[in-house]
Picture (cartoon, rainbow, N blue to C red):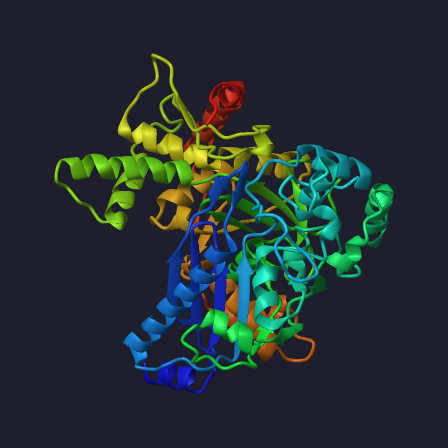
Amino acid sequence: MSAAKEIIESGRAVLGVEFGSTRIKAVLTDEAHTPIASGSHEWENRLENGYWTYSLEDVWTGLADCYRDLAQDVMKQYGVRIRRFAAIGFSAMMHGYMAFDAKGNLLAPFRTWRNGTTGPAARALTELFHFNIPERWSIAHLYQAVLNGEEHVPQIAYLTTLSGYVHWKMTGEKVLGIGDASGMFPIDSGTKTYDAAMLEQFEALIAEKGYAWKLPEILPRVLCAGEPAGVLTKEGAALLDPDGLLEAGIPLCAPEGDAGTGMAATNSVAPGTGNVSAGTSAFVMVVLQEGLKAIHPELDLVTTPDGSPVAMVHTNNCTSDLNAWVGLFKEALESFGVKPDANTLYGTLYQKALLAERDGGGLTAYGFLSGENIMKVDEGRPMVVRTPKSRFTLANFMRTHLYAALGALKVGMDILTKEEKVQVAQIYGHGGFFKTPVVGQRMMAAAMGTPVCVMETAGEGGAWGIALLASYMIQKKDGESLTAYLADRVFAGSRATRMEPDAEDVEGFDRFIERFRAAIPAEQEAARLLKD
C-alpha cells in the first residue's frame, strides 16, 4: 500500500482508459504493470435517425466522470490526489465514422461500428481492392457517404475513430495506433502504414467527384506500439480532469482499438496466438503466420499493435440479449420481494446452463439487437424459437442463450479453421462473458473446439491493455519487441485457467448450430415484417 502511494505521488503510475460499448473504464498501474486503482462510467449508444451513435457530450462527460471515479478510488485507498502520470494511453471501440471539418467541427453524428448501413460501399470496395472491407470499417462509411451524396462529404478535413478523436483532443496530434488504423483502411504490414496501391485505387474511384481533399491527407498518421504519440496539453488535461489538478506534459502512447488492447491484455501478439473478447460484441483474433488463401466476407484482416497481420472474426452481437433476459428474471424476482445482487443473479443463472441438455434441448435463439453481417442479417430482431417437442426448461433456456451469443462467432471461426486450415493451439478469453467462473469458458471451448484459457488478469480488460502499451513506450529497451516485453516483463509467471473442449459439449453445440443456421431466414423475415 505504501509503495503504491509513493508511486502515485511521484507520478510514476501509468493510466489506461478504454471506451467500451457500455462502459468507460480507467485503470492505474504501477511499474510492475499491476493494477492499483480503477474508475468507470456507464454509458449506452442510441439509435438516432437510423444510426447507432454516442454524442460528443457523452464522450467528454463520461470521460471526466470515469476519471473522477478513479481519483476518488485513489483518494479512498491511498489518501493521494493525482497530479501526474508516467504515461497515458487511450483506447476505444474500433471502426466507425467520425468526420470533421477544417475547424474541428463534427460534420455528421458519430457512426459506430454497430451500424450495418454501408453494404453497397463495402461490397464495391471489396471488389475493387480484392480485399475484404467489412461494413463497419471507416472507409466503408466514407464511401457510402459518397454514394449517398451526403452534403458534408466535400467539407471533410479529418477522418478518425473514437480513440483517435480523444487522443487528438488530448494532445493535438492526429495519429492512430496501427491496430486501430487497420480497421479504418487496409494496412501494408511491410511498410507499417496504409496500403499505397489501395489508396491510389480509391482516389481514382472518387476522382470525378472533385473533392478538395485526398484520402491520405484526411486519415490519421499511423504509429506502431512503442512510438511516442505526443504529450498531454493544458486543454487536454482540463478535459480529462475538470478539477484542474492534472498537469500537462505527460507522454501518451498511440491510441489503439479494443482489438489491439485485447491482444496486449492476453499476451496474444505473437504469430500463432489467439484471443477472444466476448461482451456486447465479440471477436476472435488469430495472429497469422502466413496470408489467407481467399477473400472471406466473414474474416477481417487487421494487425497487432506492432503491425503483424491478424485474422479477425467479428460479431456485432454477443451478450446484449442475454443480459436483457437476466434483467427480466431480476424484475420477476423483485416482484416477489427477492433482490439478488448482480453477481449472484448472473452466477446462478449461468451455472444453471451446466445442467442443461448438451444441445439446449432443441431450442433456438438469436440475440441480434443489430444487424449481423456474418449471418447476412441486416437488422436485428432478438428471437427465441422452439418446436412443440423442445424441452423448455430454465437450464436449456440459459444454455441456448449462451450458445446464441456465440452462434455467429462459431460460423466465422469455422471458415478460419476448416476452410483456411489456420491452426490455433489455444485461445485466451476475456470480457464479461467469462466473468462467471467455468461457464462462459466451457461454452466458448465447445463453440471454438479449441482449449480456452482465462488469465487472472482477464477482468482488467482493454483499459489494462492500453496501460501496458503506454508502459511499453516508456520502459522498453533498445530493440525490445512488444512480444518480448509482454512475455518477459508482464506475463512471466502469470497464471491462467485452461479448459479443454468437452466432446459432448462440442457435439451439442454443433447440433445447435445446425438449427441456428437453418432458421436464419426466419430472423431475416422478422426484420422485414417487424419495424420499430
